[in-house]
Length: 377
Image (tube, rainbow, N blue to C red; front, side):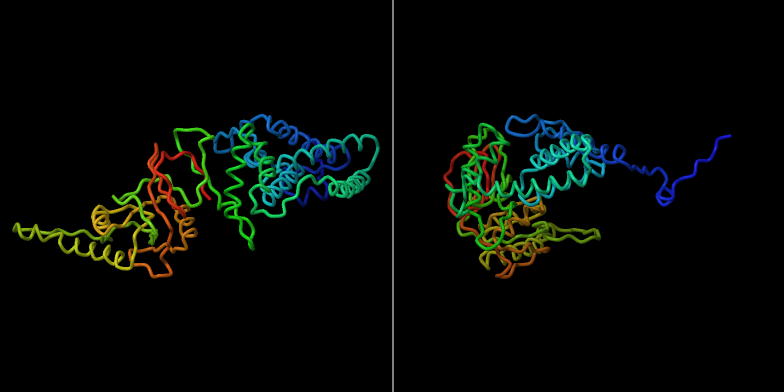
């Protein structure tokens, strides 16, 4: 008969299966080893010559990247001590948008050296005090190591060396070209009062060319063709609808008995007049472009061409929101004419022909040339 081994008071408070570690070798060293193993995994991804990692998450989705933020996000670290380093790197990502790998490597290296110090007989509190003193000294030294200062963030030439350093670690060999585009895009939209919004600079990937064919466009680019025959509008007044650009249908079904040819001829006249009046109401208030978040009806498209109204269909609700924010428009949920406050405006709305048709909004006309991969701000 096996003897009953009583649990400690602390384990009685916790649920079944909980592990309780105490002491230097059980708790401290196991936590330090977990952190150093995580940092060694990420360390080889650092720098322009960093190695890619293949990560398969719990959804069996494959990631091949050397970006530390993506790797630690998909790894789903569960160890409490290692998770603290992960949280520190995520905070770095939220504050600066970069430097996650540096935070992981710095923290991991300090903890790896701490193992040697603890094995030499120092207590954890003494190691912590030494690191705090080193931190204060580092802050003093860093002030004397400034090599470049940016006083005007809207000055492209001043920002270029800083951007080149950040891009070089991700796109080795293309940093000179890409830094020019990024500096141009960021300097154009840099606000004077508010903080910089990363979502205001976006990239549009187009099939058929290379990185060196990229260009910067001040406006917006949608990888969509226009629905109407009108492909260019100057000084466009835009109505945005989150609903389909079509006449509403009833939920009930009915049967219509047609006895004569005259009845057949007049059957759809009322519907056509209703659609024509709906599109004419838009034209009367000066609308020259309609953007819809749903399907575009054939009859609505016919009358839109008749009244020279450009029609664009955007399937993504996020694109619809970004468009409304860019042109100061309001997305309407039904097919009613917008008020003056709900109408958006842009200097040019055009279709650019390429391997993939593009709908472009910009402040100035673009030349009719094959469209290359572009970054839109």
